[in-house]
Length: 195
Ligand SMILES: CC(C)(COP(=O)(O)OP(=O)(O)OC[C@H]1O[C@@H](n2cnc3c(N)ncnc32)[C@H](O)[C@@H]1OP(=O)(O)O)[C@@H](O)C(=O)NCCC(=O)NCCS
View 1 (cartoon, helix red, strand yellow):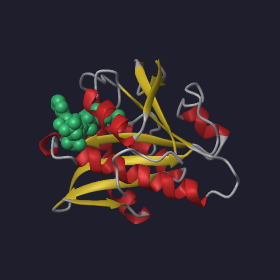
View 2 (tube, protein in one colour):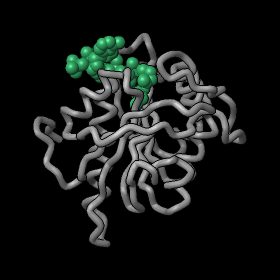
View 3 (tube, helix red, strand yellow):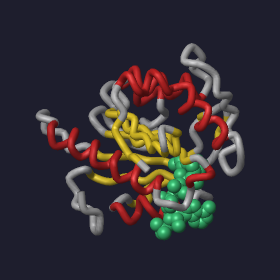
View 4 (cartoon, protein in one colour):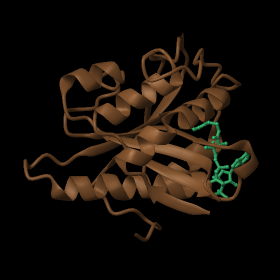
């Protein structure tokens, strides 16, 4: 299994596959989103959502198994007010300059082998590097949100140093469903993750 940060060409070439995986695994419980795979031209679709993240500088991390996509995740710097609104993260307390760890999904056939954990660690590493390179004095916070029933995700993020900080129900993927919110200061030292 290869875990890598995708360059722009790889993202553009495989965006429809990422969108398909994201759609397939989030239209089912507990997510129950109304998210068709769609296309880059449809902002209401999974592919359109990922395209928007890509257009706004989102970094894609990808797990490849013999060139087959086993998992994908994104981390994006919240570089402007518009992004805070489009991603519905202003409500959870995020500020311009913070980092948002967006959509992550693992192919069902590849689960329980640590793929999500490795994608999560790589996204935090990218976020930390970006935070360290920031010269404007802002100490960024990394934010994630997930469904309250997805215990494995909450457990992994907690181990990485994130803390639970609230719940809300943003209008995402065509539904208003509950989300738990977690955050971590990016200058905080994680307890047991070595980069
Ligand atoms: C949630 C999801 C990302 C986990 O991916 P994964 O690659 O199987 O996760 P990992 O192998 O890294 O496992 C992470 C932890 O969860 C546990 N775990 C994974 N799947 C589990 C399951 N179905 N039931 C119970 N525990 C599970 C693992 O044992 C591990 O725990 P540990 O580190 O304490 O031993 C994957 O199931 C998925 O894509 N679900 C649909 C989309 C989704 O919910 N995405 C999260 C959005 S925030």
